[in-house]
Length: 132
Length: 267
Image 1 (tube, chains in turn blue, red):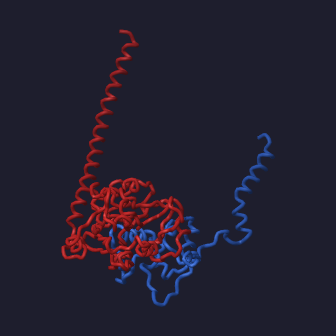
Image 2 (tube, each protein chain N blue to C red; image 1 turned 30 degrees about the horizontal axis):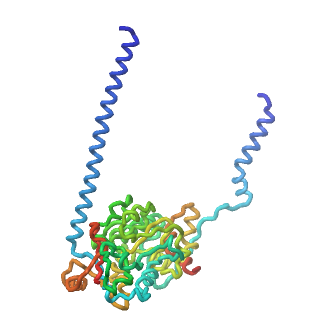
């Protein structure tokens, strides 16, 4: 092989640069990206969610989408959860009633997963009402 | 017969076959398309019939003899704007309006008279979305973002609106407004219980569907201190709206267009 010295050195430099993030994380000793930490509500008068935690983590977007269709298209505004408890189908009035802080709850996972739902472009969030 | 001619005839035959198959296939596709379109037409017709025969058909009566909007009263407009987070851009070009005032001659163009009753001459008429029986905006909406509810309210689903503004072109009353800018900064006091809109959607009066679903009258009806606005089920012969219409002469805006406006004005 001609110029083996140059090629091998080049390869070593390339692999080193390419895997730099891994080395950086190993040396720094922590993941550069923080796992989401949710602040859960401690609300005395409302301690029941519309569904269980696992369901909410996996399917909250499906539930909200169903709500949206029920309210806007079908004029149905009440939701009964599995314990037959009644909830108004409303993101602002029901969800944000307990999960009062969007940046400490919704945004945590949304930012981590890199999703940008446009719900909050129209639906009021407690924070942006306070800022007004 | 030389080789060239043979080849030409073969190719011509193949081409003829190709054209024939293409036409058969496309005509089949076309018949399918017309079927879909005619089905859609049948559906709209059916929904129209069922709506007029429905138990509840919400309508409003505006008693212009009681309305004092020409004296500067804007109670209905203010309460509506507050209730629905209607932005105020501070100019008329981008204005978003759910209820607004129109001079009598502008609101009822087809009733133009050279000489008019004195009271009507300088009259300002509060105008709304007419929540038509046969709404042209619903016909043209490509995403079915606007549609007619069973109780007759012409609703907007802002989730689905793509901002094409066909409905604005179709509406003969100018009842629809487009958000050219993000309206959030232009709302003085946000009502937390009603969503704001976003840039690029159309909005209009919806007879306060969210209040009606909760058993409340529309905000404008509640706010009117002159009691000029009456709201109710026009299919119920004993309702207040029907009684008013029975005892008084009423007009509607541009009824000749066949849209079936459901706001009646007593003059």
